[in-house]
Length: 136
Image (cartoon, rainbow, N blue to C red; front, side, top):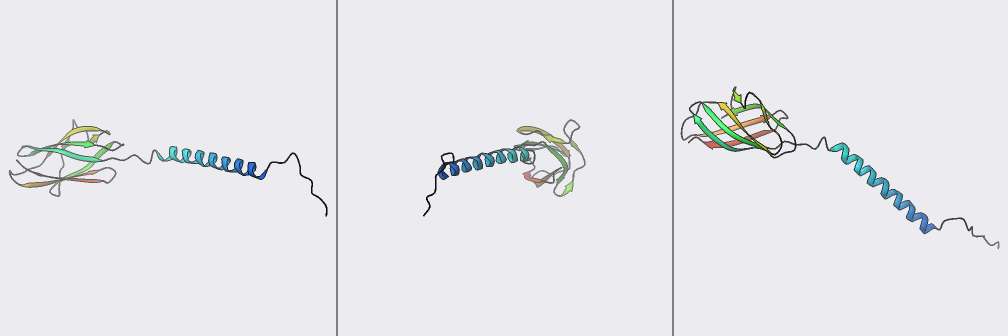
């Protein structure tokens, strides 16, 4: 039998495997960081909550809303007991609020003392937020 000569210049199979694994891990980390940077714009959400409702006069409801999400929220539709409210005032703006901020909205709607009213706000993104309050 002929004896095989070992090459002195070749890498050992163990070292070659370690290098391949290290390169694979480095490439996968780079791809994960790249994909994370791409998706941050799509991950912004709005989360409106109505924190306080005051029945100010016989034709006016004032509410405090907060946005605990990461994106600005704009109210596109408001209703009281499923009747659309046409007047919303926040210094003339429909912009609800920026993230982690509170704002007061005033709506024109008739109400009676002691009755329960459901307030429904719909954002420009189509999210619906409801709140029930008793007129007092």
